[in-house]
Amino acid sequence: MAESLPVGGFPAFLSSHKTLFIVLWISAFGSVFLWQRDIVGAGFSVFGKAGPGRSMSGSRPFEFNITDFGGVGDGVTDDTAAFERAISAISKLGKRGGGQLNVPPGKWLTAPFNLTSHMTLFLAEDAEILGIQDEKRWPLMPPLPSYGYGREHRGSRYGSLIHGQNLEDVVITGHNGSINGQGQSWWTKYRQKLLNHTRGPLVQIMWSNDIVISNITLRDSPFWTFHPYDCKNVSVRNVTILAPVFGAPNTDGIDPDSCEDVVIEDCYISVGDDAIAIKSGWDQYGIIYERPSRNILIRNLIVRSMVSAGVSIGSEMSGGVSNVTVENVTVWSSRRAVRIKTAVGRGGYVRHIMYRNLTFDDARVGIVIKTDYNEHPDMDFDKNAFPILENISFTGIHGQGVRVPVRIHGSEEIPVRNVTFRDMNVGITYKKKHIFQCAFVQGHVIGTIFPAPCENLDIYDEEERPVKLSTAQNVTDIDYGV
Figure 1 (cartoon, rainbow, N blue to C red):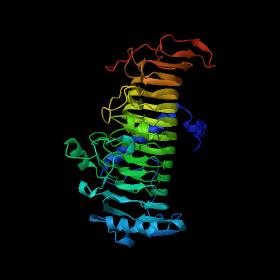
Figure 2 (cartoon, rainbow, N blue to C red; figure 1 turned 120 degrees about the horizontal axis):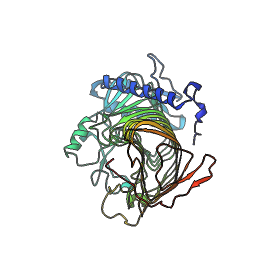
Figure 3 (cartoon, rainbow, N blue to C red; figure 1 turned 120 degrees about the vertical axis):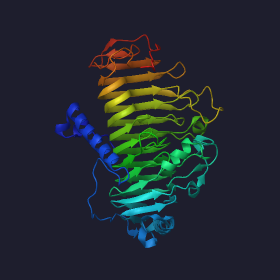
Figure 4 (tube, helix red, strand yellow; figure 1 turned 180 degrees about the vertical axis):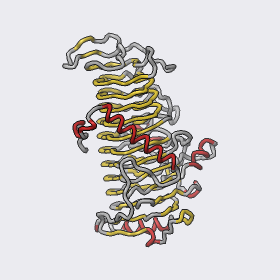
């Protein structure tokens, strides 16, 4: 897995938290302003946009243009067959290094299609793949094995707009071209209970290795946006992911699910649910499937979620989640900044999780660990399957405009063990008690932090010498009314 970037790797003029915060805030605000000003236009990337006329030439030995296979790109003509013919041609070239499919400027309307191994899908600037809105054109697939009978409905689920299974060496990239799920009709039908199957993601890659998503915009997914499932060696970089912050249910940005060796970096995400949610299966089905998510690095992001959280782990985490680093992330204008969520019946574990150099701006709750997220696939879950939550650290946590900086809600059945806080200074908007809330949590604070920690935690000085040891780990000071 890629090594973490040291804090010192930032330029000198970003060395102070205040300056870094201002720069990231300006970038985030500017990106959302431009997106909302031109919501139907091409995607906007905080981290740069390719200039006009740049070559689409890639590293594959063979290149094709979608127009060579009959693609029109006028936003009206159905180009599904053109994509299928092009990918079929590339599928025959795997032993010769594979091929690149170039999608030039235009609006390419298509039903869902499948990728192939040793393939690059390259979207030029002002190229936009549009998902057909008629759900009858979206194929039905069996429910995910680690989710039981289905996520939203029992039985079959809709496939994704861009799909792949049992693949290796797949790249989706470009000069900031877009993949647009046109999810508005799906969201409306979901709210009106007119769908009989779980909605499909925008991009879903399953049981695959060596996946790269870079330099594109993903927007308006019917459901989760990018969902790698049981994959190894996944890289997401310089990607913009957009959906309305309200009225776009379950449009998570990136959901690594039972995945190993994942890097997500240099992205801007503003969606209608979790910006990132690490998952590994749901209750007894995830326990039986037994595929953890592990070795995941998330860094250099600006994220927003006014409905859920910036970066989440769970609640579907029954296969286990471990060895996760979240660093250099700004969460702005969000309901929650970072969250771990689970419940009785999940089983599994969340351990060895490191958060460092996080900035919160205008978040209702900063850090959340919740152990009573009682949503289940059915009532057959094991009432004695208690998840393990341990070895979780928070270092370099800063921000302003946060109502409740910390809420760690363990329970007698699911205590939270070995939590560490160090170098934390979060400006608050609610100057009363109960803003650092704890229940059934054991851990320690190193040095001085603001706001003052709950009495459940041991206090150590900067040299990590004990100052005051807690005898009240099981004290409950949770107030959801704050």
